[in-house]
Image 1: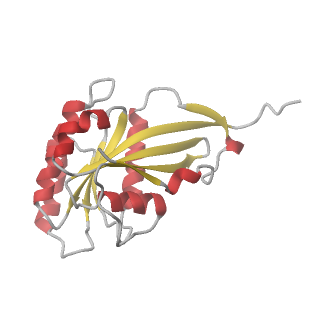
Image 2: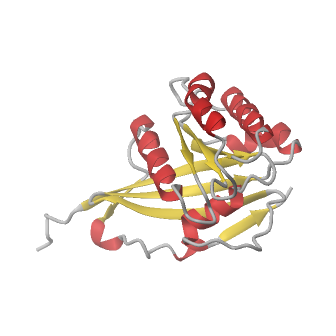
Length: 213
């Protein structure tokens, strides 16, 4: 007789964009988030890289994030509609020591909102990362402005982060996942027995594949 009490797990798969100006640390943020480490020699993206992050969200839910690391070259803003398609959330990264990259973050967010929305017409949830917070003295004036900046540009929130030190990377990721799940009114991508899913099931989790255009 089969066991009718087997726990069924919801399996969610979300495409997440990681965007921002050149050199703000997008690839390092992803590498820290997926691999739990930092590589001083990590190469700058020249196209689009991919990574997979698997999370046991709760006892009944496994979330897989397909992270798209889009190069910060200006030309990718003109090509990004195809890259954005199907994304459920995004991280926009800027360099806390370089104010011009905050302007760039606003431009990336505006571009994203023009080209992508949820089924109900609302913007997808986007979190702002004030990255490299370990690199210099904090600009308190800039930090104090970020609440209004996020409100004006329709970010759902922001975090000071450091890919090098691992500061707030997991917290920002968890916050974005929560926001995406609140917006997700569709069925689970897949229904699987709980005993078939573990955090180690996806050997590709720590792999990053480049796609250069």
